[in-house]
Image 1 (tube, one colour):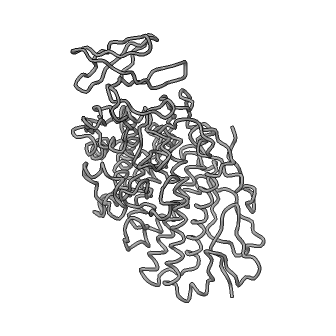
Image 2 (cartoon, one colour):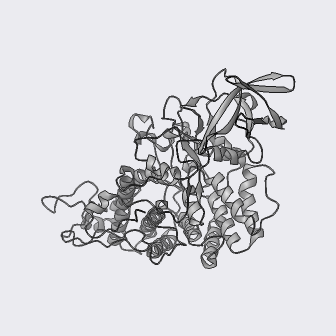
Image 3 (tube, rainbow, N blue to C red):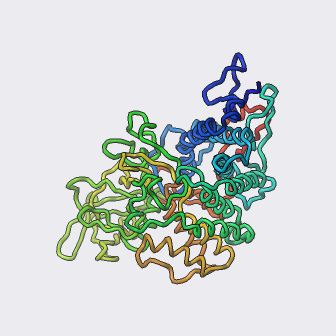
Length: 566
């Protein structure tokens, strides 16, 4: 009787020891499956979804930490610091986890596809569709992390290995080298289109669905649509087409502003905007404390979490661009709804201060929080022996400027004192915490309707259909900023405005760095933090992509080409 092992890690193929009649955890024999596919299929599929849980943590860190939405209080010995510092190395255990858990899920999904015959029942076909979605989605996340942006020679640049299932001969195993970026995208599209065809049952946003496949296709084609300067209109139109399918389906709805400001607290099953999320539950975290979940680095809530990463000065400025968001408990006012996901740690009974960002050296920016004194309409602050009189910029919003001792004029705000971690005010991020009000519980969002409107806006702009792009852009913008819609959109401002809105809306969803580079942009992080503040990462920089984990290369049964090291 032929036995099929439903487990493979690229870089470490798990072989059954001793007799072939014995199976490791996660393995089943094909006869059991084919004799009772409905009973076995759900268990196998559950195991595939389970792999996404382990994959989603490093996925978030790879995508978000390399962007400009956050800062860290200082350097760290944790492997994730390489994502922040762009000091790329192939020996990184978090990249190992990202690669291994993702390829496990690809292999398990592929083995199910290869074992189960299509066309028996709608339920079986739907489960096969879920497998195609998971595989296509994972190949996409891999190719954008390990392969160069699509507009850069996709026919020759390398993507990732395409290994769709456990080979028949695992003894003389020889797996293929990395496919090109173009071939990897072809695999992604093939899988997602097959998923779209087979998925006819919607079991909610914690399972793959037709809408999830269409949402991912809208993003995939957007990534293929070139830059604003040199768009690929064929792919831009396909991104529009798939966005239309999702938006016009009526299956999803944007949350109104007041509910959107609590997006992080809703479970995926109770959120009309979520299309697909990787479901997490509290019992999956050691001691129920969530220290090691994604949100644990962004905040300390109820004594839980490290709270060592904060919203960047750049992101705070973007939130305040159309009006100051005031987080002080006594004057709480949110202008941009996305500011509700930021929570400064005000010192209880702390003094009023003037906070601004100053330049401490040729390439060093730091925060200053100087205690103020009010005397009638005059406001002064003091630092050491130096006293400064503040100049109003927008007095009703308590925005002022200071002519500092270095001869430069800086603009800042009057605020309450925010407690420091090292020398940095703690602007906690809670977008990845408080699901069900449970500390740092968070089910990572893969697709939601807000993104789909922005996908369509960008694709419309690349097609030169600026009026339609403006409508979609303002649908998202005016939800967050009442009366904040743009009056016009054209070739001169579309890229800047759409990019800005994607940054504001999709922050802390592991999208930002990829968005910058895929459109030919450079990443700059000129705000306080231990990173290289004045470094510019060009889209052609070798560090735009991650190294293939060295452990995978060492144990790979075949050639696995590494990314360039310079």
